[in-house]
Amino acid sequence: MARTNWGATADSLALLALRIPLGAIFIAHGSQKLLGAFGGHGLTATFKTFEDKLGIPPIFTLLAIIAEFGGGVGVLCGFLTRLSGFGIAAVMAVALYKIHWANGFFLNAACVPGRGHGIEFPLALLGMALALLFSGGGAWSVDRYLFRR
Picture 1 (tube, rainbow, N blue to C red):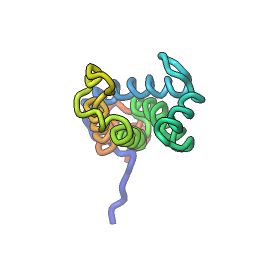
Picture 2: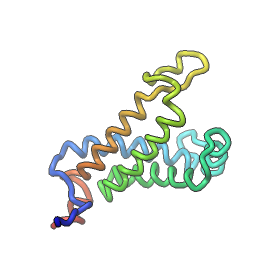
Picture 3: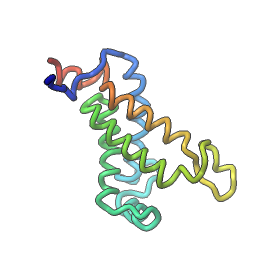
Picture 4: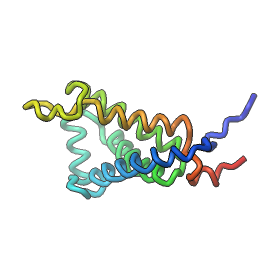
């Protein structure tokens, strides 16, 4: 039976073009929840909001914050890219189901009073994360140097 090398990565340099925006987006969103940066409310308020409004227990909120901030750093650097991509994909799958699905497809559903953003943007982020989960970090990643055979 062949041994799987989960750190192995595709040779494509194109994955860097995928990693940079995805990593930046999730570092920013994770910073909002963890640190209160970029207009975010910080850790305590995030725990309260996730539990009171979304019914998400604190342990899962903590995992989501780690997946967003830590996964963003991992994706940006190409370090443990598959694990980071998995964490981000899981967060996006939950966000699609719990928040965005009821608002339809388009991102700009906010123009309709009483409606939030649709699934368009989180679906794109989910696809980016899954691409990294399946392919690894690419030619310019830390994984490339750490997991050479």
